[in-house]
Image 1 (tube, rainbow, N blue to C red):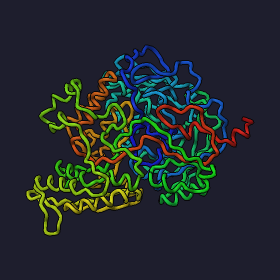
Image 2 (image 1 turned 30 degrees about the vertical axis):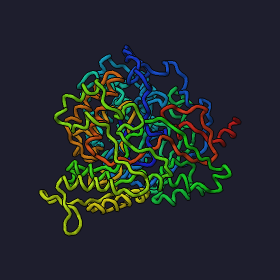
Image 3 (image 1 turned 90 degrees about the horizontal axis):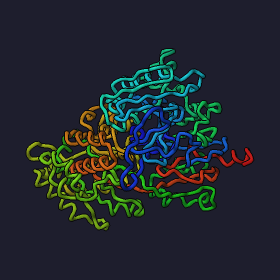
Image 4 (image 1 turned 180 degrees about the vertical axis):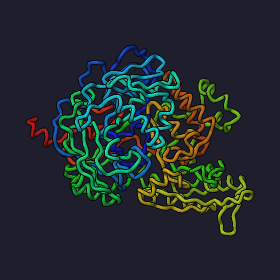
Length: 619
């Protein structure tokens, strides 16, 4: 799912929910997929929708929440554009709430979407096409009607001028046509892809009349507030510093069941910081209201301040069972130094997670073992007969460990003495033909490849994790350097795959699907702006992804994900890092929140409300 892709940002502005945008699958078998006949109000990946056609509001909102007040958030880095749909520039994600999609996912179901711009949806049993029947009253903020022409124009523009990810993600769309001003149809070039109709529902619709007038060029960066149709509009822009959104009080969709009780703040403010220390001090100083804390060290040491002790700032750690995806020090296998799988295997022995976890994270983290961490889709046991049936046709193309072993990254005793691990790494490299050169750096006797690389990041918090890793590498004759670059340079280098090693998180969802093509698909390996960061180009992986996309049952989906996970694990594409199955949040005590939280997400900006607004309303 497109919205489940993690774009390296500490805060995903484009989504109203502060969440991993992933969720653990329910145990056991999913119900048999319901046949869809005639117009329906919702569409589920498997089974039936939780909420019926006449539902009043989502269970995890307060339908009577008062409106008013301000919610101030922060972001790290900078921005120079308000257009997040293109490769050019360093766009802010804060503009996400000015747009609407055709459908919207609920956060208390694995993967079900309800009409947002679409009043009803039509889809055949084989899901070979989908029709969206738009609300006739849908309109843009300038009062212009939002029509099927806008939908078709949006699709055509994104696949021709937008980020390359859209061409990959919508590659199976055969045609898009406006059947009437309020009726639009997407036809696919394949049947029985259960996710494709849901993917089309994620399409954020853009105003054709705005982008095709006054000489505007969609493919260029802009700091002019764009036109939208969503609950907020851009009201203030200070390049590189601040974006402010104002609630549209006469928003056409405010009383739709999917929106009732949401979007309660009059103002949303996003302030950018370039330094983490300055950012947290600004929080304690009251410059913004809410933090999602990424650093275990900061969480455990920096919050010992009067504002927390006396309750003015609330500090909460909320456990979750959401899929954690995979974070790791990733190899760019496009680089010659990392094309030898033995090198990739060996270097993992130089990372002492157990010691680092104690030193830097107070032992809070769990080690990443899987690309589908914390879910039933993780390959954590020997493959059973059903999974072996999927893998068997590829036996001669895969490492034997895929069939015979359970992948675990190298471990240590946590004392900091990893002599045995380094000996193992050294032996692997020697056996692979890498000998010490005159300058102490290993070199491949046959190819002349030197074992040297640069680790690049834009996050200074990783330096303490990477520095001991580099020291250990130097002990075995691998020359590694660490470099911190500014956010804009980092984003540009990532788009162009201009790096040797970096730290990356690949988010996963409860229903993996077409986004796997973007992560690991061979066709996307050279797409500038794509997300195949590791440079995976493997026909077996491509086939397994097709199996995931074509899965007709939950059981089949899980089996194909486990098979893919196993192949990726034994390809040694990254040095696994860690994950935390909880949210760490801190906020000033000025907000009200619903009594019930969503099972698969933590909605903040769209479901909380200002206490002062409640008092002003007499509530």
